[in-house]
Image 1 (cartoon, rainbow, N blue to C red):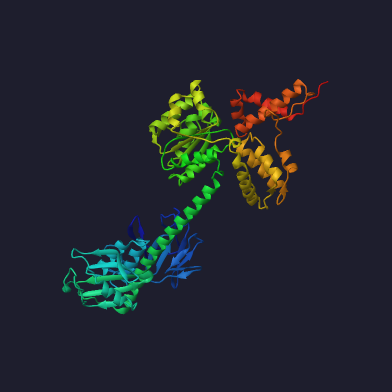
Image 2: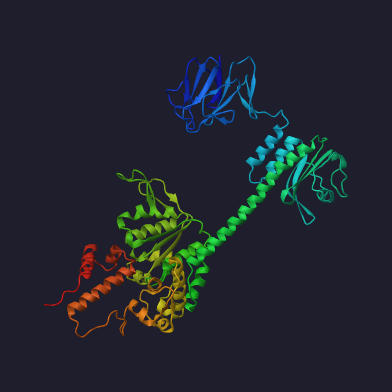
Length: 599
């Protein structure tokens, strides 16, 4: 009676094949059920005819493999055929004698124990194990590989040597209690021939710590990359020249993997350096104004620390850009940078947004990681910190001081490792004096303050920034950058830039789109800039202007500026203006309509 021998739950089993057609697969309806996700529900079928048993694949996903060959049609089975269904190995046998063993590749199945073991009796058994050791210890774990060499070939000690400009250095060494006798002159002389050296005895140079009788056998093999293998044994070595070549090939894989690993590490470091330089270029501050140079100097002094930094400045000066620059240059650059606007977080959702929630905290609430967890081991940037509510200020202070957070619905707090950067366009010290901002939180955040000057106070940087933006934006739009003539440059330098660097970038982007590869003149630039009066008014006053018209236009200017200060966020702008969201929308809607002339 024919049988299939297979493994299940790490135990080998024997299945007697019944007459007729039988099926093998993962489905419960199969005659032989194989519990493996790599086996299809109806994988293959066995049948008998007058000439013997046959196997046929039933359109399985991973196919049916017989003796390492995938079958595409009906295959007639023979005694000892090895079947592979997914990751399940089966052996077909016509009958089972009282004692048998069957080999599956380099493996042997024993009838008495039904255990599968590596066949080591043949001449290739040692080399299979050595190759497996090199594979397991990839890339290039010298010590582990040398341990395997010593055990398999009975070396008392062995080493990998590196020969560079006549100097022999030991890269890896595994030896017994007596150490490893090493004659560098002997090695240099014989490796010049680039041939294996197999010797029963060797003459040691003077000064060797071990006696000559220590080594009855020696093996010296040249390897790629200027390396060599060196092993000595107390026994006479019986290794053929062909086996020397096989050992050298296998150990050469170990050396190549080590060299490859070092090359990959070098390339990764170079890539990281290039990415870091590109990141620094993207987040770099352009300018040479003394006030800006001082800010950057102070920033660099705090890059290696985890000190909390308060970044202040008017809207559009680049507070968020400076925060990203600090992160990209800090030791935390390989982890997350999370930027949030505190004005956009409702007071009732502060804990859920900042600390996260656990599943089941409330009806239909899913598990969600908060900003502190998302920025773990990285940097958390809190913009417009002055707009944080008193309750939110208290919760933030506790998280920063204790370095623990409790997600909503959780009972176990989570430790956090996050650097905090904050920014504000308001005077926090003044808010503290007015009892609108917590005194203790202010001093906890203001360990180091970076005050970015407005663009009008660093006029020597205006043309540098303009030139940078023109070239960078032209590259992004794949156009030739426009050029500024003398008069246009003077207008840029004299303009007060109420929107600071953000406004300058916006104007340069318009020039790139409107005047590619052209010389920009005064007449081209003037319509893009807001006209200014003597006192910095944003529109010229006309004596014929009525009070209603004046109020209408002034309201529009106010709404435009408050929106710009809050990056276009209507809710934040309404809150900053002290208005309800609905009233703010109402004013915006009125501004979209033309001013009605008086009757």
